[in-house]
Length: 127
Image (tube, rainbow, N blue to C red; front, top):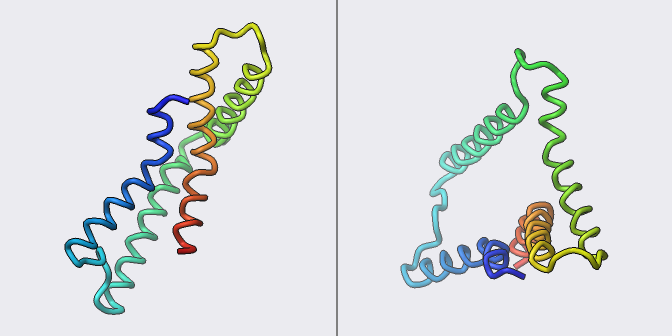
């Protein structure tokens, strides 16, 4: 596997480790609310951010419904196409090794996009 692909898979872990080291040496715990009012403001900011992302992803009332449906299907269809291509390349004996490596790296990034971040957050939550 390409070193860049491996690096992208471990970037969240590396950044959390660096943040933990900085907090250890500086004695800080990161940004934590000092009282309930600040905690509520942080939660409201997160909600507003998620609403803005949903609004961007959902389109607007001037967009035709079929355009919204095509936009919504782009990521799942692209991921399925890449994974199916990787399966085909893996079991094919006529594919060039360089092409197989490129397709494998692309499939690795798709699999990390689908499962890696959630898996890492699950492990992070358990500790």
